[in-house]
Length: 103
Image (cartoon, rainbow, N blue to C red; front, side):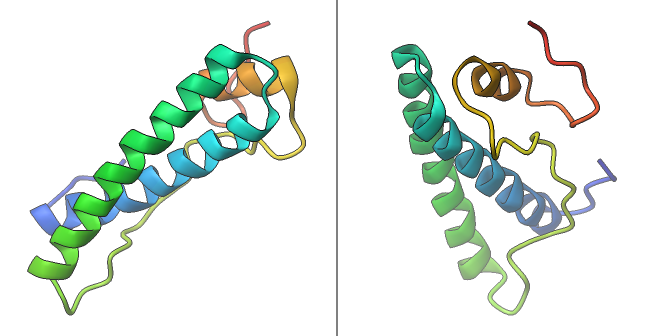
């Protein structure tokens, strides 16, 4: 990640990261066979959505003329097409696509 130069820069970069986490957790919720992972996904969605709402509110209030999304390179794997154990492992590793996924 590049250097964060301001409060605005930090918040604007965190918004897409939180959106990405919520999207991945929603995919996990829909595709996992394990109740523990569904519970975990719901918790991620709740926490990240709450923080996202807070950050978007601050950006709107403090920086109304600026974009709410900063530069962002995805950090989550593409989870589409995965289900069951494969989805669980890919979600848990959360690394770039090139990162090894443990068995």
